[in-house]
Image (cartoon, rainbow, N blue to C red; front, side, top):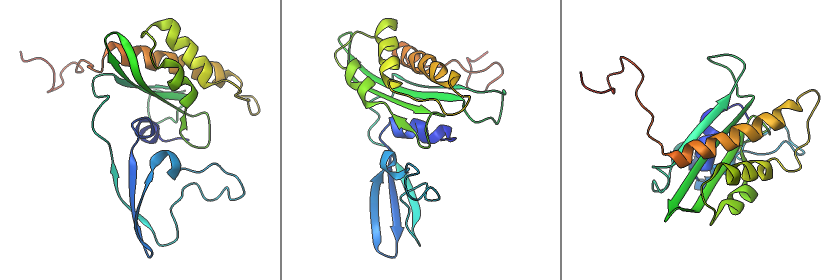
Length: 182
């Protein structure tokens, strides 16, 4: 899936509010995007005459430990070859909850629930993150000449988890109005 934002929002359990001829409804963003199946022209669960009213995020449980990492061919305006959104809740030196969603590896943002489950109760170490990243891509099959993307996605996922564990604060760019006062 080419969207950077959708990958991050799926990792954070975003909900889509929809209105249409049948009334209003809500659907988890993870369920909103569809796999091709029998109707590859229908990429979402949006029905005829429906429109998105809002995208809602739950309480910021992962505000201090989340990160998005993207690998791409060019510096700007390029779709991800592989991306990962990671969010961790760490208490007492252990991961009590983890979220990991991959982008650029499937027709929709791919939530790696098996990797999330493996991280629960683990210490936030590079080894734990490498194992979770391997689980996230377990069984992945290349299409055509893109086998390199499986290893790339593993590395991106492990890096996103490592950076999320380190904390979300990212320093402002030089000359940014958000940088330190001079």
